[in-house]
Amino acid sequence: MTLYHFNASGVRPLLEKQKEYFRTGVTRDIDFRLEQLKSLKSVIKRYEKEIIQTLKAELRKPELEAYSAEVGFVYEEINFIVKRLRKWVKPKRMRTPITHIGSRSYIYPEPYGVTLIISPWNYPFQLAIAPLIGAIAAGNCAVIKPSEYTPNMSRLLKKVISETFDERYITVVEGGVDVSTELLTMRFDHIFFTGSVPVGKIVMEAAAKHLTPVTLELGGKSPAIVDESANLELAAKRIVWGKFSNAGQTCIAPDYMLVHKHVKQPLIDKMKYYIREFYGENTETSERYSAIVSERHAQRLVDFLKTGTIVHGGCYNIEKRWIEPTILEGITWDDDIMKEEIFGPILPVIEYTSIEDVIQMIQQYEKPLALYLFSENRNIQEKMIEQISFGGGCLNDTMLHIATPYLPFGGVGQSGIGAYHGKASFDTFSHYKSILKQTTKFDLSIRYPNNPNALKWIKKLFK
Image 1 (cartoon, rainbow, N blue to C red):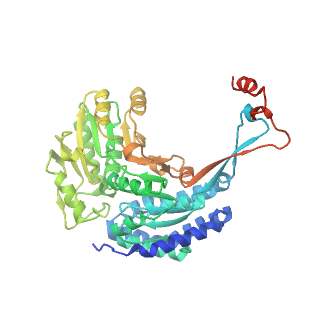
Image 2: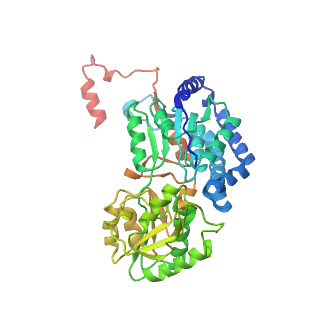
Image 3: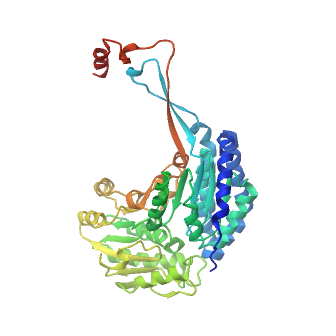
């Protein structure tokens, strides 16, 4: 795989041009924003086939997966925001306390300015464009830095964006780690990063030097929990889909599974069945199964297979970037596979006897980005939601919470800062400015130091 090594010095003048363009006020105009969002949708439609082909070439993504999780996802975001944006941009009238009689309170959303969007390789189209939609909707300019691990998609993104937008408004900068490092030395007005926890810390440290606000969409070990009351057929089907879509290279994929000991074996048997149903007997040649992004990532995943007992799968071909959907048993919390996010098609299974044990197990890790509970027991459902902190998740399903624009998506703690999708995308790329409009028809003298009765009246007001 060819990695780009571009000199980022040319970006600094471009950043200044974007700042100058933002100061003209053009991007703040609501009609301009809506026009840009519609133009973005049009160019995506024009390049839709090439986008899907590129995803196939680099990640062997099946067309169904590429369309639904990357292209269709973006269409839905644009449609949702275009329909509601005029309402969101209006100043919002707020209540005013009696102490401020004669005044009115408002909140004005305003764009940050020039934003930096750093996107990853696992969903290289969607995770570059979805934040961009929010940046445009809020009235910002944007610099997009795609991943060097999917260079063909990075090149296509640059082509799509440059054909549609003035580079003073939106541009794509290709390159490797050196380019990202250089970009992070520059003073952007907001940074939106999607990627790993270690790199997220680097981004936040760099942003802190300029006190730049950040949105960090990270990851972590997201559990799937299956209790005795669960519908095992649907649990098996939905966990297999959530775990092995994109060959497990999804930030919100179930990272490991906790299953009640009384239903563990029948659940695993059903999961084996659905793996074959979804991907066929030979996933190495399956048109419905994705590849690992690189040989280096494949080797890292293969090393995890040295622990525990393989109860399904376990075959691999590093040169072809293929690892079979694999289920492991006999895993302990001290094994390497349980010390970091897997980000691949390997699912460790750990049994439990009580829901209190599950809570204790999960709490020993950092707060996960997602959690999936399969249970028909409402008390257990409420207990898990109340007692475990996580970014978001599903009851009796996996991953679908990310696909609704009505729900903000984001992490908590080590799994991320901030959220986006739908209205939350507009909020993320907006500063909310508080304004108090005071009357000039009268003036209450009790706030002034020369009023001898001021303290008496102030005390009465605050009581």
